[in-house]
View 1 (tube, rainbow, N blue to C red):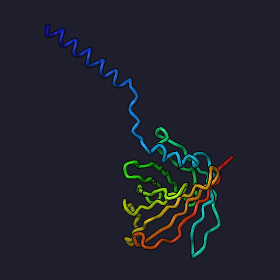
View 2: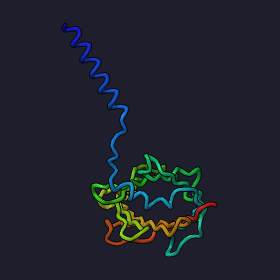
View 3: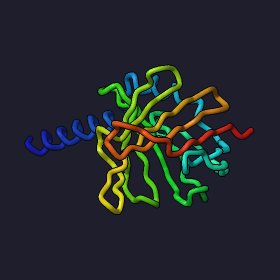
View 4: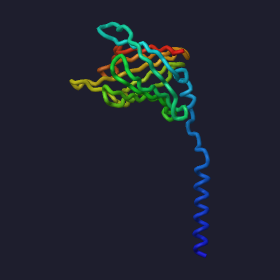
Length: 188
């Protein structure tokens, strides 16, 4: 009798586990999917003009080819690591929306500074997100101990063009100075 109960319990448990794994997990993305859809125009292949701010003026543009694609069931947008860049620093970025805090987060990893930088921002107007690394405090640190904060303004003009304007601060965002401007045009 005891053996029958044990066998029956094993069969019931195995059936429950199999049914649990066969069902689709619930979609908990909430407003994240809609927020990420606003970035849909960025997916694809791009040719970028990269300008650096030097001595009070923008440099001549350097060309860079860039690819953005959606990952994780369209809940994250990733900029793939380019083979070469005008600055010599290769960077990968991923943007995702935090539905619980109502903000976008951008994670940047590169082979220059060597630390993951986290930015947070909101879309205050359609197609425009201003990110900073002020709250996460993932600052780059200079040789003299100075901390470099960055502000990234992403402007999606339409499905064929977007701009990333990068500013730098050495006083934790009290003042911002131009650092870099990236203008991207879709490759046909």
